[in-house]
Length: 546
Image (cartoon, rainbow, N blue to C red; front, top):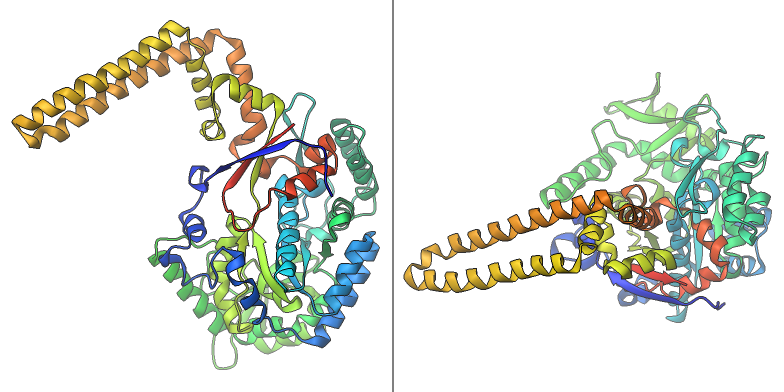
């Protein structure tokens, strides 16, 4: 699997990415303060063989899950490679798992990055002697339709254009139950116009059509995108998966006090260490939702006593015994919350490793205590591949003004100022450089003389130097803004950079659909990107695509 694309990459540490949490940064460097929350370092090669010995998986469950996976994947048009991987699963292979909400047209670019990371992890594990296959968990049971019914595709002018499908079901229904009607057709046609004549456009037409759901259409598309890679897709909404998960659903109710206490204690420990809680846990928290009248409704604890306590599902009150009976009779109406989902996932699968983004890494810091209580083993998590694709037009603008992605990540206004500053007449730029140098030289000499007279005044001298440099900075920014106002090219170039690399002030991978790039460069883009996926390298990459 090789293509003709020319791709070069540069690494950008996550410290330079806006809004990166301290928890994620400390996890990437695996500082001592983070190790009590994660059982394994983010260096896969250090522990892959040892961890494989700790995966305990029931043979009967493996057989049943294998049957469901084959049935589901055949329905989505699975490739021979995927069916071969399902056969490997049945014969004892472990799983490198990832997952994502089933966003319109495959969702943002990072959904593709997740799948490629899982493939790479499975490949590396297998090369190390641990047979492993990639599995992609489709989050069809999530109920936030507004998060998945839209996507941004690149327009012919390079601007992200937001497309929304108006398909609806019952409020708060699992998104996998929301079916497309005729309203999907004009959205597909607009997507086709933006993507042009390509394989991806054909795949979108085949997948996103009346009668399909957000979940099934996503699966149909990904089955085609990753046919050569053998990615196994899994839809957890399948009734048979819920029957297999009944022991965990029961435990979530029968051991609710124990689990809640462990989660509350973990939350306090995280905050004491200076970290955040991704999910707020209270004394009313349980790990389950129940579908009531078509809506996914949270199960809350009202009281706890010797008889198991009382619970509320919407307006309905139930005892522990009554909830457990409902789980036994209709497990398909129950589903896990964000902290419980990975635990259920890794009960259903022999998961060697899970790969996800910063938010999922944070989930695992909390979910670890649930893993310990219910599975006796915490699945290690690794960061997914993260990158910004730098196309030729944006690369030319960056080069012209001697900018880098960190400059763009400061926001559109700062980009305009930076370009304006670099667009000033050469003599004016020289005068500013001379002013900076003069301040540095003069104040260095003055600081030395003052230090010999009274060393306690050195800090005051340094403060004066900083203040003068700051005033020059302010003057230069005002001059740059004046240049910006009279030069339309500056605004055009700045907007082009922001739209391409930091659209709507978020990373490109989180805002622009992956299919935009696959349509533009062909499926060989995936093979080329795959060469840049290095599980033991955790920087954000800037990849030039030409």
